[in-house]
Length: 194
Image (cartoon, rainbow, N blue to C red; front, side, top):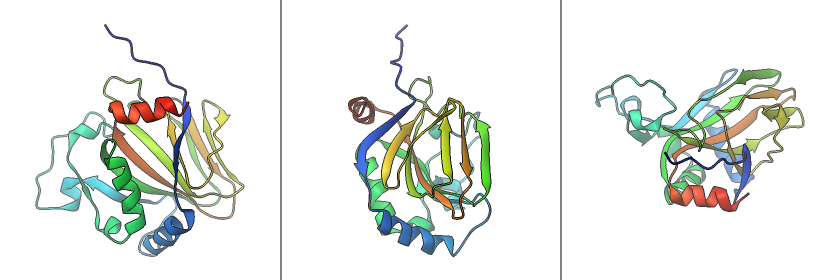
């Protein structure tokens, strides 16, 4: 049986994005929907975007992107710069779930794992994280070690390991997350970024 390569638990990728353009579009979308831990889906399961489509069969693990087809949402139509970022990753891999994750000031995401979100997993999916808005009080811990993510950067994180987030600041933490089906192209980019 072939053994999968073991990657580092955090790898900054060689991409950077215009924070001001992302913030402008995100704040426009935020005016339409917001709450404590808000998620704005930019790509979502097809049956949720187009309600005329049938529901797919239940999934054992919703992080496994093969359980359904994925479509762009109306929110993405209003965000051309965010769309260009997603399109960039479509050049490398199949893009499934894409979300804007807001974490309100004074909030905590408790330690947890996402079992399939790692290159080393058998039926894996990977999540790329692009911080859009941080503050000095935002801390993202992976394996009890702080990950020093800066706005506009792009990171691969092995989220099958324990991770947690603290927003002790006075503004929202906002991340763009992009779930991809790993293939040789994206694995090569990650591997060359170590």
